[in-house]
Length: 579
Image 1: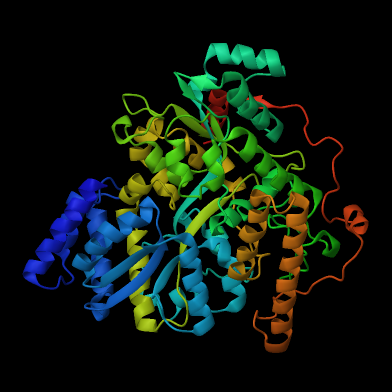
Image 2: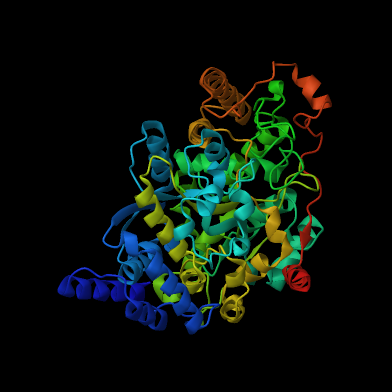
């Protein structure tokens, strides 16, 4: 990253000395030669793609636009490097601002509520697809590409190559967002510790099965207990069997809505999201667009036995097996803590952290060896006792370019050019090497990632495998993501603080979601705010009715079945065979 920053600073100095940078084929060739390698395209193909951008951008040369995204390495690279390349090649200046994820969601919500053009485009999670398709405040890209934006839509865009397109398509079949990057929550573990023969023998003697990648939460809990209490210390340092975060902040809510409940088994089978009950516990009948409730009494599952079990395990494991300070960490603080090298495993680990986890030991990363090879691996997420075949396995974050119709069309078209530029095949491979958050199938299957795969701990093997489709974002059951998401972190925070039990917190959460959706229903019925697809809540019924009639799953007598594990090398071999 330092090299990229220096090259960007040098380019800025040239611009300052020579005046504004206008569309320039020579600049395109220079960026192709000096920065945009490797690529799945030849240099000739890259230049041809850039010629199209130069021509299409001519009406907008000299325009200055503003875009917003959250702060992960991928977007930092876009902000630091690709904006400069885009300006030199097209003549369009982009101010690419970086803020926290919560602030990005707030900005999107504010622009939708006020119709004031705060930003010309957002990299906004596809989790809002249910919101954008209902509120109709985002430009439907399918319509725009075939109509008013046809002249600024690249002939080499190749939508079929984007892995997250199904997640950015609304129930009306229209594309509302263009994937920019995506990453998954997977299981992370110290393979060097798991391969230790002494630890393997001790684990088998105590638990009766092999130390390996946990298939279910029972095995994860056993491994957490084993490393925390039985091993306790490695090379003179205290070690822990689990890592997570618990700070009362918006990302604590996403920690749960990002498939935690469905990993436990709270939702229904069905992909990309459960039908009729999704991972938020919201019920929406198949073939309809109207959510009918989140609480068990209305046919949902947000406060059902599986959801309460999920929250209880999060809280128990955080207190019993994680480093003491983890309860006060947020999403961003949990990464550097893991790189200290004192944690055996993490059940809910985002692959967006891969770029930092492959840094050398000289930069403070104790989870690689002296040659920079990872001592860790990533593997599929284990599932809880309520999970059943056909349910999603985990979460896939698909950060996607979103254009609100409160943005003037000329500015939106210039921003659409920028969005296509930073996701183009010319640029995408190099950008993916920096951020390791893949959007294109051709990129992850490219030769350069075949060569780099051994240093990435299973990331490439996972993304090339058919398993990746079982990790999905929030879907269309959620009618208004900004309004509902803020409920979660506040209620879950009450569990961490000790002011509510998991059952009390989830009862309150489900009730508040139903109350919020009731107000949405009223707004939709009276003013068509949600295009007729707002909630239409079921009348409350006794919980027993829904337990017997396709609602939340009833409480299991045994929530800790026998632990199950698989051998990591066998798992990777299966992935490779499936490719």
